[in-house]
Image (cartoon, rainbow over the protein chains, first blue to last red):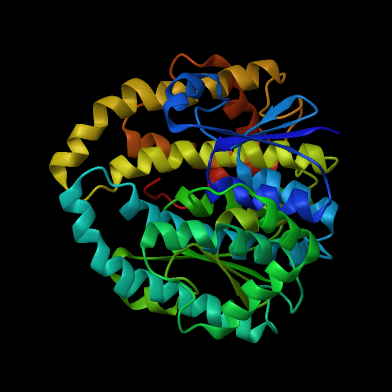
Length: 202
Length: 202
């Protein structure tokens, strides 16, 4: 099968897909376009957004659905339906944090954007990150059931993007999450991918 | 197993779970609290949000993950990993429309809220809804692969909520989606649920 990712030259929402494909040792085309190309490309996308992935030429959007699909191939999507659900819950909790940060980072109005920053970093971020730290502590170093799942890869893959948007280090003072990050980045296929991936905005 | 849903007295994000449990002929406790109870309840929720579902006493958040889990039990989550992914993509596309509408409906600033309405109903809503209509037309009356899946139940379950937020009838002029809605509401277990569910804000 052939895999082609189309996205900005950024990690962000495409990086979980790149992590999973790398983990699976699947070669993929990693097409990155420049910001000035986006207005022309946007109308050609299934729902006007990226990333998209073409699998054997079939154009797919929705990065999390695609990541979940690849995770099943990788054996990282849970050993039964219950565990799969717990992993999905963890991923969607991380998405909720991402969206809260995004509401600040992508606010086009400078005034309302500025007003969002203090509650974001003083309340919302600690609320989520402390819960994640506790969950990982209670689950023996992982998000779910004491073993590696795609929730862990997803978190580490988008972490640079979250830090970039929120302008602080989310792992500061959170040793369990820091250890999880280091562990994921030591997986040989992930390590090789991160070493060779293009320099880009997170 | 015992199932207890906790949510506002509303359809909204809890209704897909109620649809799936009804489809499965599973009895569930449908606990609905009043708006004035929310400030006291919020800190007791796993991530400060509802709905939550307690399955055999285990407290779970993230309604879509729970709905997907129930869909697997119902045989509505695809016949293989590829089809499961297509269903997940459809659901997340519907979520994107929901979030776009929600950015308008939940904007606390009356001025910026008002400014969002025209682009929402003239651009965003037709963009998504016309695509959904076309997808359902091309898939023999369903969202995915010409057969009933949880994407169809999910769409119909949250449709009243979407219409309520956006203050127009999203199915107006979209006969394929209208037929899909009617068909889902004719499923005996869904029909029975809708007939007996409490009167509530969508």
